[in-house]
Image (cartoon, rainbow, N blue to C red; front, side):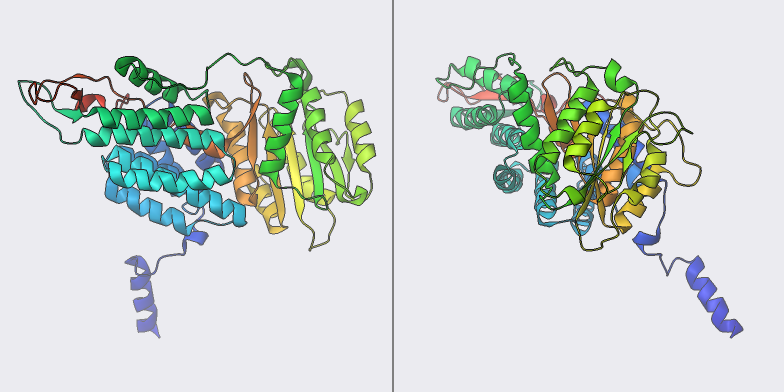
Length: 475
């Protein structure tokens, strides 16, 4: 028996027995903060820093799909192709959710795979991966995503034709491009702008080719949008119904932020304060529900020790009553989000067979730490009760709000919910899960006429290899 114990101890010490990934517990809050900070560093071109933050997030929670996928992207951009491909494989194994979620995550993997192939100059393979992602996002009506993909395909066509890198006439390494490739690239940049005229990278790439080659191509005229509140409302409603996938007979509980900032801060594009906008959002969602017995509401406000201002359990109120209640609230105080989330399961029924959604509408980070459970712990409890948490935030997607978005992401990722934030200037309802994708813009390098192959090929162009990818600290 003693010998058996020694053998078991030796096996454990030498690492022959590894704990299952699901049992490895890290720091969820730090993981989400690192992830969000990594996204913002990636946007700014600080790839090495982004990679470090994504590595930390992934190390804390190896089972998180977004962490694994984002880490694969920066590994790929740092030309660590083998490591990136292994992380892509791991990401595939982490796909979970309903049919729509699975379809979306597979498309995201295809997109990131295409970007990694571009970063490693595998342009033919990249076009195949990107076109796979394009089909899915087109079927989902995600025009912004389709635009980003078309721009990436246009870039890969441009760069691929110049991959016969040459060094001659004392010139730096450069690639040659024939006019037919430039025309094909321009057509994809044109498609990108038809999908989303506000795509800055596609604007620049299309203009560069159009002006340089004097192409007879047209694209949508990019104007400063004239904001119309009715149109904004229609766009928000479409985003809500498309993203949240709430059904008419679902149990739905609203957890509405009534802190003081909700009336002191305005939504720039509409001129309405945040609380009036929250009222509108709540009413639009209530408008698709049909059962008075399936709705409830709670408030997030006051301070750390005051009781809830509004707390109405499912089955004790009606749609009309909730509309009247939210119209009569006077926002004040702070944002004790952790406290209210810990209590929120009590707002639902005990029926195990009903679909349940908690919709959090807020504009700030938690101001009152809960003595027993943090927000990620509450998220796990809600997930165990089959409650999806959706977050609609008025905060802008910046590093200054990393702590708040870390909490929001933990809530939605853990419970298979959605995180949307209102982009303040254009009044667009955006999904945080696409923020890293939107940072994957590709800008063409400058190019010029080449005489390397002599006068027999007068329309040959070239670009310098060193100009293909420019980041602040790639290596």
